[in-house]
Length: 243
Length: 95
Image: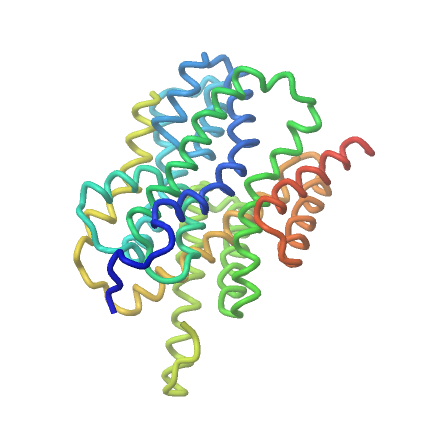
């Protein structure tokens, strides 16, 4: 069934770019706010843009700003960054299954640009995803993040305070926007998301573990529990009714 | 410091591609990995969305409600994001 390049409508790269536009727009307020906060924390525009280029991970960049403001040591900042970003391990393992086979250097290149958002968009696509799609998607997200971090440092302070505050919801609203359509499709997804949310709330509110670990543990628990229940259910029936 | 942060961020991102290259994982693990996106999204949204304003929880609850309702009604991701920002901006002006 291998359709060769003849009759295809648009290249995977272009479809990736199109899918990336919503992330690019979603990053706009967050990167802008990051740039602004970086400036108030005392980072130069050069350091701000460099951090966005090299780290490219929103949550940990925000956290590093508050740690810098507290006067935390460099080692602790790096360690915190590691813990906050360890969840990408799970995402990469998932994408490694879902992405088409390709040369390792290509995978190493696009893996640099995996974030919660690019992962969420890529992983909710139907079927296998191609290298071109991932590059298109990730490049739009990456450019938006880097450019608007710089812009935020330059002009962020001139935005009204209330608007700056309300932009804090942007990231979460985007996750909701990605999740809900899938929830409407399948009851299994509703359970997965609800369990992930409940576990993570218990772990963070109970202050049982640092936030980075909490997200990883909650995700794994939910994904394994739901899978185990489904395997048991199917064994009983002898048929599988979902994906 | 920035380079250190970059390194520890990149390692978990690239390691699975090296470790699991060309290997067929057991079906149960594959199933679990397929579940990961939705479980992560749940955990990324809650409880953080409630606490975007630590001293006014209604702010986060309102933002979450707007986002969920808009998304449930079938709004595009961009509309969900901009709509939530707009409603919260309005809320701050009114309070």
